[in-house]
Image (cartoon, rainbow, N blue to C red; front, side):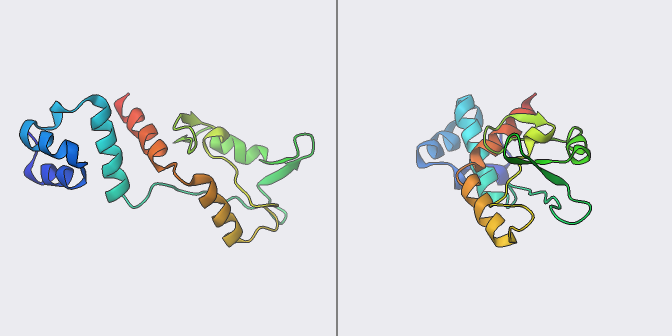
Length: 145
């Protein structure tokens, strides 16, 4: 049985087709997929933080990124990449739990040394659009293991 407050919260966010089943039969009447969808919906509607951005310094004598001419792309300097080896996070585009630089894509508008914050913000927002559910599902999978 669900706590009365939790039951009312779930009923408030559940799609209409699940509301009657939840009221009548409880949470365990839902399939694993339905429970996961309900958890994702709860996180997206009630949790105000789904993305955390780490800014890297791209100018001056202690720049944390460098341009790789061979790949024609910006990359983290070795010390910054090593720091990421100890961090675990959900990849925002795949939902996969990763450690290392792969978990945090390096996003820039054109050139990280000259990009304005608004330009980077728009670029990140465009890339991250519609990925909230993917991120939340990745964290939920992590919690289940």
